[in-house]
Length: 237
Ligand SMILES: Nc1nc2c(c(=O)[nH]1)N[C@H]1C(S)=C(S)[C@@H](COP(=O)(O)O)O[C@H]1N2
Ligand SMILES: [Mo]
Image 1 (cartoon, protein in one colour):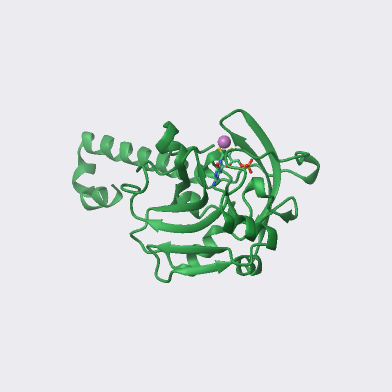
Image 2: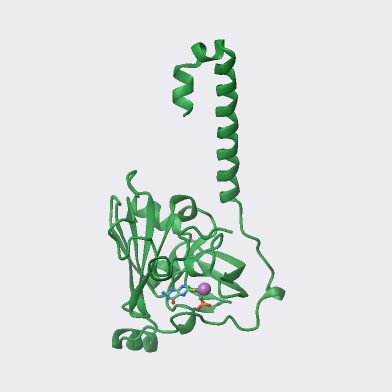
């Protein structure tokens, strides 16, 4: 749009209709910019005094496989998080690798569409760090999250756009309230995407995939709840 108007600028600016068109474009640009700036704003953060006494679990509360049982019992020595898809260098992280990265800790409120909220303190590296390490290619439009659990007979997965992927409060959390993630809350790794509703925070994370389109992936709507129950893909707050 900006290019279009820059190219034809002197001609359209001559006419009355042209300048009306120009100011309409300027208006459009200002609104788009405001919308984007709004999406980069931080979610409210709280203090330790605000922490919920217990952070309930919802949806899958475990992963029903022998591998998960065994890893849970031994502190997840063989859990791996892959960063793949449209990236220059696919990477694999152990839990130890994740813990050694620069960390962000944030106390935020989780809002589930089922009508409950909880405040928790989450710690982990920013997703942007992992994405930059792998080198996301320009063709990528979405970041997909693969999970180890099966809910109602389907593998859980989710996806977000690049604005949320690079949001400073989007982290790969391995701690809740200063302790390793509890089983029910997604041990050993779960996403926190703080500007989004609860179902956009995948637990039991196994892979992060940069993709150009959501077409042809699982049910094609970008997430478990979106595919199975018609939830909105964009659940921003
Ligand atoms: N892998 C996976 N991630 C998931 C879910 C799930 O069932 N499986 N449930 C989602 C929903 S609806 C919510 S509200 C939150 C619940 O997170 P909690 O169990 O830590 O409360 O996780 C989200 N992420
Ligand atoms: Mo939820």
